[in-house]
Length: 218
Image (cartoon, rainbow, N blue to C red; front, side, top):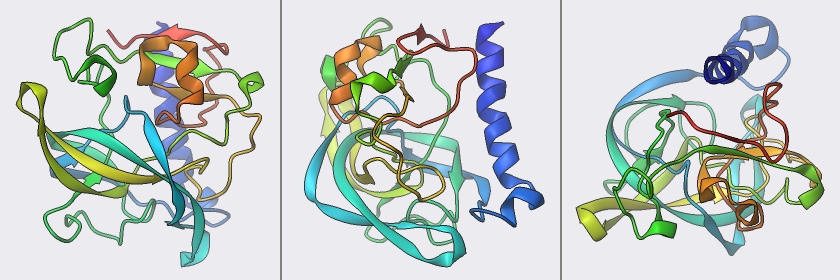
């Protein structure tokens, strides 16, 4: 039952943000399913570039955040996007120069660089870990949802990957996340040290999961 409550929690956040009442007060989200190639960065860790990236914010403007580069496997199919979020421009059309968007699809197994891109069930497992606030890393996770990526060829196992540039410490609203914040990440296979390695994550308020808890989709 915990799995279903978690999924419902995530979906309820998305639905809540998309309701007219909330949209009038905050970010004008436009959640859609895009079909085609997309990068799935959920289980990736990232490297700060030292530069910044412009992020879409409420009201149609942008804000700059510290940037990080993430290597993410490419999948094909329907995936959730926010056409007004990240650095998307209101359409599912791919970024220029044969690029792809970093979108989201719930998967329990994702090939990961930390395990040399193995497709094995154990090494590709992507359980969710809740990084505790006391690690002081809440502003250091990467939010790759709805950001542009460039194709970066293939890696071991003939897996096509993309290099995605993502902001550090940015919420789904285009606002900064405080340093002392819990965040959830499918990266690192529930090893706590991943919390300080700029994993891809999100500051979702999981009522069912305590800090330091590990949960698998199966």
